[in-house]
Image (tube, rainbow, N blue to C red):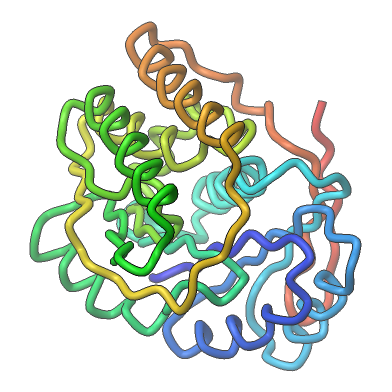
Length: 259
């Protein structure tokens, strides 16, 4: 089974196009609305009703992509525990703004299986990006390479494929704080001895500004924290996550209490 996990914050203008393109590629689609103040949640809700498949996780407060991914990971962990998924299912994470090209997924899945990867992080062509962005990405990837113990070329890419077995294993080491999801996922995966690849080239539809110097510093810190948490076997408690509400297609809602 192939499951797409798409965090979204104020993406009302792009989310339908992304979902329409993802639908024929996915066995299941999960959107995490990260406290959007526009119509994103309502638009996704209508899409679910019309298409009859998928799940919307609604977070009341915006906490950033890392936290939204943690909500999705935690939800899928619970789904796995009740038998709705297999450890060999594959999770595909991608952005909701349209910059990623979901149509590469069949080729990415083939490459993942052929090369024996448990985690595949896309490698973007950054030639059209500003020089400052390319330098920042190189530094962050170099830092992650040292922490992971293997060479990574584009650790910050948000398009990635993860076997459920790997996701389940790294979740206790994943804090979901700030803007450090890419570093945390890559470093924790490698240090937990999952086979990690960062050599599959993917296209990007356009360059979207947004990352700041402060975000880069957060990434550096979160990469080091992921390395340290694995080294010290410093695991989070299973029930520690973000608050969200689940809406399943076609029509049911369940509030999940979190301490």
